[in-house]
Structures are given as structure tokens and as C-alpha cells.
Amino acid sequence: MMLSFRLLLTLCLLCTLYGQTFDSRPPSEPIWEPPNVFEELPLGMKATVPKDMVKRLQVDGQRIVLETTELVAIQKTAGGVIGNRGDAGESLSWLCLHASDSHGTWVLWLLSSEIDNGAVGGFRWELVRNTTSFDSRCSALPADETTVKLPVAVQLGIPKEEVIHTLGSPSFKTSNTFFYLHEHELTLHSEPYTDMNTLTIMLRGSRVAVIEVWKSTTS
Image (cartoon, rainbow, N blue to C red; front, side):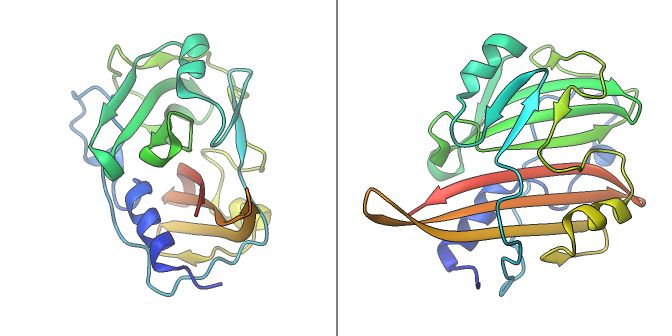
């Protein structure tokens, strides 16, 4: 299925991943905001994944359903400060969480765009330097391998071969990024809608350094 212009525009506005990691961030600068990079996905890119990949996740024992669970509800249990930036269609709210495990130090941003109306619409989970400092508005989570659980067997630090074994061939790829897209039509309240789920994997060397997911239901 060919992505429509509307869906392509949505992807361009929502996906903050492509092209930036914290390797370029000054080591002395504490982490707080998610990256702000908007790049177009390749024109003509097809949604090749047959079903939704990540519609939910679990963070420190709390179940989060994308497009449903409110960002403020996570804040009440996980702590931290909700950040905001941008206006109208480019507005973004986030909750910054961090921890360390056997793969290293990581940051997890729970993200809510303008169309999510306060709910968690996506997240970005990223490995950072072990010496990274975090802003006081970010909340520290327990150092545990199971602090973040996804419904697919993909996590930070695994080799790229394991990603392909689990998810199959990506919808599109570059030298260091795998893009997985799912899209299907549905009817809500007698109106046509499009459900879209994106999963983006960025590699550092041959291992997963960033996982970003978005889910959107748009008319």
C-alpha cells in the first residue's frame, strides 16, 4: 500500500529520530529534550508489515497503551516533569526517564504530539554514553533488565541480525537505520480512518542503539 501524502506528512512531523544521536551532543550538556529532527521518509515507501507491531509497552511495571494512556498518568507513578515545545501541528510533550542495565545507560522519552491530545502516542528509547548526565526534570528508573518491556522481542543492544530474525525485512533501510511500517484502513463512528504504526531501529555499529515507535489513527 502506497503511503498517502497526508500520512507521509504525518510521519515527517512525528518522527524525531532520523539523522541525530547523542554522539554529537556536548558531553557536559545534560539530557532533557528529545531530538528535534524532521526528515522526509523516502517517497513511494510502502507499508509492508501486515499487522501492528507495537501498540503498547510496559515501563517499570506500568502498562502503557499508545493513543490511550495519558502522559500525566505515567508521571504520577514514574515522576519527572512533562516538557513541552512547539506550536499547533508541531507541538510535542514528553516525559524523560532514564536508567542503566547490562547494555549501558539509556533514556526513554514518552511522547505526545498535538494529535494525541495528551495521550502517549509514541516513544524513543536510546542508549547514551555511560557518563551522560541527566537534567533534574528527568526521572531515574530502577536499574533492571525488565524496566522496559515491548510486545516484540526487540531491545537496545541486540545485534541487527536478531532484529531481522524477529521482525523480518524492513520496509526500507539505510546504512544504519531500519524502518518498519504498518498501515490499514478502518471505520470508526461510521467514518473512514487510517491506522498507522511505525517502528524505527537505529544502529550504532552492528547493534541497536535507538528504538522509536509511533502509533496514529487519523481520518
